[in-house]
Length: 103
Image (tube, rainbow, N blue to C red; front, side, top):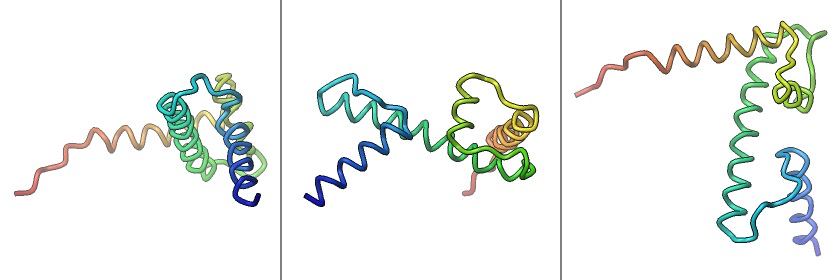
């Protein structure tokens, strides 16, 4: 019973946090692909939220769920838009640097 309850809690977390209310396929591969894509999206949004949050003053802070909603609607406040842009610009800059090969 405990193991089954753990699985139920896990799927409830998936439905709430990964925005997967229903599974589109019933095959093992379809379920895996949908959950994997949702988990990757969650990790990227969580990473962006955590890094951007450090640039925001406390009174302009918001919970992760609101961050995800505003990201989907493209309705960020100016402070959050600037913070997200700074974070993304920094990592795009680093990804374009030429790293010399050793050897």
